[in-house]
Length: 232
Length: 371
Image (cartoon, rainbow over all chains, first blue to last red; front, top):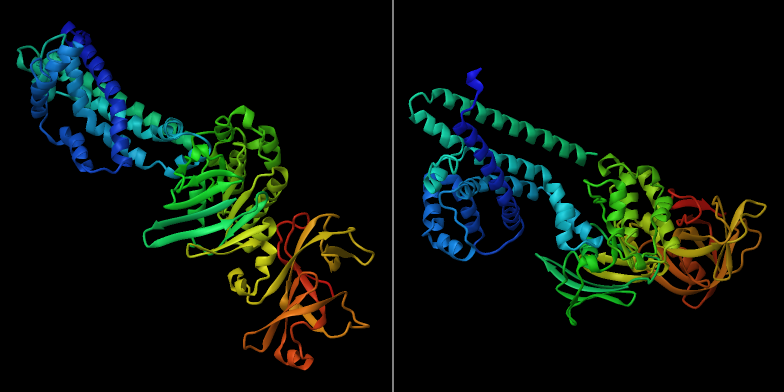
């Protein structure tokens, strides 16, 4: 039974991973919905540039993305210095930085899923709601958003899974500090580098698989429930 | 209702202007692609005209000169779409409430129970739109629009997506709307039977323009518009009021302009409005009042004009207290030496009863003989 007993390092990695992923998804969701809306509904010069920017983390090597974050948001980075000076916020080498790295890497997946569902929303229904006396903002929250729900769920699950798996950008941006930035994949990597680490690595591997499966099942159940609601 | 709009959409242009009735149903009639829906969308505020003015009962919704352009949610217009457009994630009750809750309580003159009763949708309230039939969906859509207590109703072919049984299910409710609520209704359709059943006024559209607008009887009796109504021949539409239910011979008496038209085969309550269409070929002309004839409907009148379109027939417009078209052979016209101003007698052989306001619903435009 000793096999199933997690060491404090592994437990910490698991806890931190979940914490970082939840924050990464929760904080990026409003921006993800906004970006999806802008890309799906608006026409403006430079739209393809924005589209490319949103999708950049999908095609760039994660290490490159992490390095960019380090340069921009590190304590002495262009933006990081300003954030520290005026807001007192530091991303470098703490869990917030890990969450930011995860959020940035997961962002394209989130936006793609949300945008797809938004494009599937019948704009005729929104027009009908307008004639019923609802202003554009109210229409968005009472009609558009509920009809996007299945896509938002898919996007959230995808982003959550991607966040849990984030490695390259995290280790480059916030390093591998146990209890601070050492998430599950980082801990697994560390365990493979030390003697006698195989057991721990195997445990973390199994845990990762279980979390991923649970997330998929959850998303499937929720998506079905929403589809059933729309079909009456 | 005053609508005057211009808008360019690709290589199709809308340039339409017409006046509708301040209450009751104004039909917007024309073939598919004439721009009817575009007009209605502009009235609702869903598309913006390039220029023009839209005003409903003195309330200006859009005026390019004065830079007025109310957003759709401020226009107080109930829009009933061809496809219903119920919100699929809400129950029927929530759909009905959606607009009502956005209307200040002080401005509501349509009440929930009243609408549910009128439309017979009480048993559907807990269902979701996906579980409704086409006719039920349209009734809920009508109720939802009514419950915003609108200043006007727009109906864009509300029956077009329904089969004839479902049409017959929804049509009576629309007919009742005009009577129960004094809201002007702009009713878009390319089905003349629906229009005859519902409308008092009509605007005829073709290729983005309004060809004619006005009182429906006048328009339907105009010789230059007949091809529009899918008629191969001219006819006269007269609005009449039913008198005593029936005489001892089973004939209904329909009063118009001080005269009585006797027809059989209709069931109209006294005082009901009955609209009849008299095809020109069912009207004969005599110089003297015929004696010993089986015909019941003989009206003295004067010839107003004779239309000779070079066929075997000529069309004669008579004034018998209202306009009446007769179609006779060219030979008869020569034999009788008909000319404008000549006093004659019009012999009506049969009429088509079109308006089923309180007669038979769902079987519009049936012919009845009154020989």
